[in-house]
Image 1 (cartoon, rainbow, N blue to C red):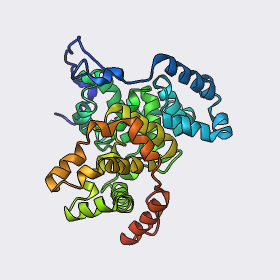
Image 2: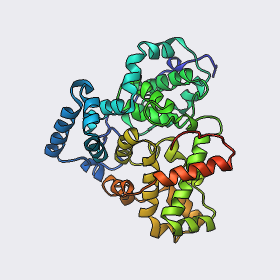
Image 3: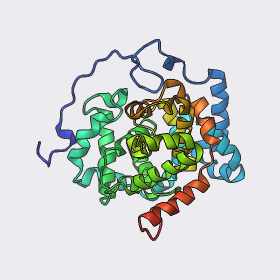
Length: 349
């Protein structure tokens, strides 16, 4: 394969027409599975949508005013889950990406059409690995894969210091299921550059410095909130890098059930990275009694394959919200910086 070839040089392959998909667009393994039942009753969902439309206004015109007046109401409603039909718009509003888009007209088109990236072949190679069971991304070099390529290529040009790292595909892919290419690109910029919360770019820089810091902090949280499990992990020589790296790199979008990932992303975009720590500790807490009985090999498997009941958003997320992490994260961050001889923080956690 020549380096100069781009995404448009490859021919699409035919795709089977008959598919059984869930409400999010993922191909079902079992047509009669419980995924057909997810979501609220229609009347209740309609009431929620009306409340949200009133809160955000036409095209988001009332959003900032409402957040200033009633921040606790906004937080509570986001934690209950953003209505799926409004999710894309609300994500752009709470992330700050809508403002970036308006301040940079024409920039995305310039990056996609007129610039070249050293990461193009890597992006093409990884495209088919991103949400391979979703109908939007299934067709080889089809519209979904082309959009994903464009967003990732544009970002790799926009921020050449970061370029492209494989885990970024899941972030961009998730965003593309709820918004246009240009909107997804600017939300990716908002996340990595820190438009509202702390920058995430350290998750993807050489050496993954922010991943290392977050894993260190997670280990301290486990010892604090689940001391017996923390001791058991130490005895079995289990550390967070063996199971939790993808939690941070993809914000749970890689291997977790999609309805749970969406609910986590709702909160993540509004409240920041703390929700990833909270959900991680909540998962371990939920499975505590089983995990503490397992030896190394079975532990590794269990930590990468949590049971279905542990992944229920309505059970897991209230548990996560109740876990306090701010003080511990601040203290462990200071310890991490001292241990690694850093004069100042990589980022705020």
